[in-house]
Image (tube, rainbow, N blue to C red):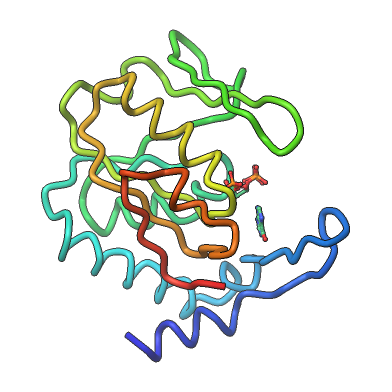
Length: 177
Ligand code: PRP
Ligand code: HPA
């Protein structure tokens, strides 16, 4: 486990002042490019789910970078993958939740028939910053009356205290900064 975490950390690049001044951007592109590092991510997420939430029915991923890890994990677990998208991207009836960003408003949505009441779901994204995105996703799952077991991210930016925003739903992270 420690060796896998070290391999993952080695493949996360940091870019100061991106996308704006003062932001330390953690880039997962090198992680995606290295097959062993990407396998390590899937291994550790799978291990976490099998230990803590073996009853999970669905993995629900967030637009856009949650889509890079979610399907790999869902396939390992033998469960389905559902997408939560930014507004206006999904056809058919949808359910949406709007939330406030640092600047302005955003809205996420899910197809109405994608999650049934009582289904046991786990949310996945690449990174937890302020928690606004994951919080909106949790609200969406609440609207769908899903049984939300928890959230998972590859990277957690601890200083921004996103886990407090998502409370009482728990957030599991592989790497913390
Ligand atoms: C990033 C990241 C998370 C979110 C975290 O996505 O991938 O989804 O921000 O920030 P928060 O915890 O403060 O809400 P972004 O909105 O940049 O979209 P993208 O994945 O489409 O690039
Ligand atoms: N890296 C990648 N995505 C992000 C970050 C970051 O540091 N902060 C918010 N979204």
